[in-house]
Image 1 (cartoon, one colour):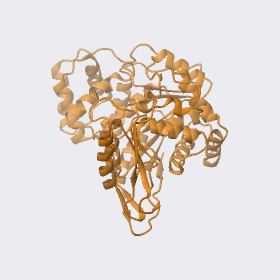
Image 2 (cartoon, helix red, strand yellow; image 1 turned 30 degrees about the horizontal axis):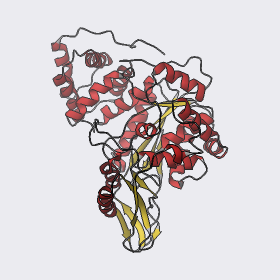
Image 3 (cartoon, helix red, strand yellow; image 1 turned 180 degrees about the horizontal axis):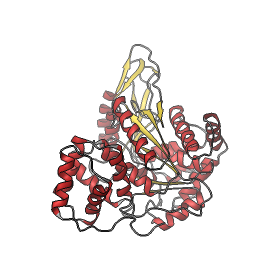
Image 4 (cartoon, one colour; image 1 turned 90 degrees about the vertical axis):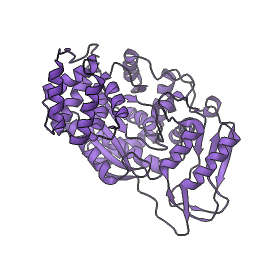
Length: 450
């Protein structure tokens, strides 16, 4: 691990130089790697003012960036802080990033599964905001789990267990924190070049040998349209590859919740059920597809069938479950969680079914609406500072294509109070459409890029 920022030479750049660089980008010009480095060092040191940083993000939002500019921005942001070093490790390092969704508990399964296949996974994850859940919130719903052990201990955990999942630290890509805050304030969060650099700079700081990306599309995704998802996935793969990190991206469906549960403790319980041999088929398909791509990117499998076989064996043998249990226990969580989940994971005081008002086929989800139901129950955040209730959420969710009878449960609502439960039931009923005609199940994985 490199304890010093890799490129923070603290340029004393005159304000006129910053103005010249910003004006060039405002007019649609391409910045050099040196100019981008100067801007990022200005971000980290505080020399670049908030107004100038806002001008930069707005210029990028309207003018875009070339792939060469995105590579330079990504590497400069990576080098604004510590880069992890793994010289003594005896296997490839790989990680995964998801653009976020409902019932997306993939990371909690994928990391241990890949570790069981011989890879090392130093995963830095985030919290949920808005209608999507966060991996960190799920893990922190486990009693005692330490999501911020420090980078030295994080390195030891990865070496000892093959996998560790922690929260973002101030030491890794610190420039991203200030840039993202400015993007939020200036409504430039959707700017694809800034999304690319934000995602990849943190992954590059992990010192990886390979990366897989889960770019979601559909009515519950940030990239609702397939064209948007393809653009983001393509740019992520291009920039990552040009910067020297082998990368593949899968475009997956988020037009319905990915699994049977949505809500932090409920999703951890479903992960345990999955690892104990009862996987949701849609969740399993996405996990295996991402796992196979990851093993191929780092050379642990030569072709698709071999990679799929290795991932399946890791799950069926119980090795993935063992790695999950070791990760949880070594980061302060309870020993024996997989055997006694109900003893350790708190339940909501009110649990009620949402019953189908008619017979027919589940034809559509308002997936964002489902995520908002979880958020309003207290399981998500409208603002970063909001506290969450890890007990609440939804379980037993139906799927598009399911045949249901009137009075049959479509889901179970886990709430802190009867009033919350009744309000959630009203909103959730509006988010699930039951039609008179049979419909086909939605695909899980649309395509792979890279």
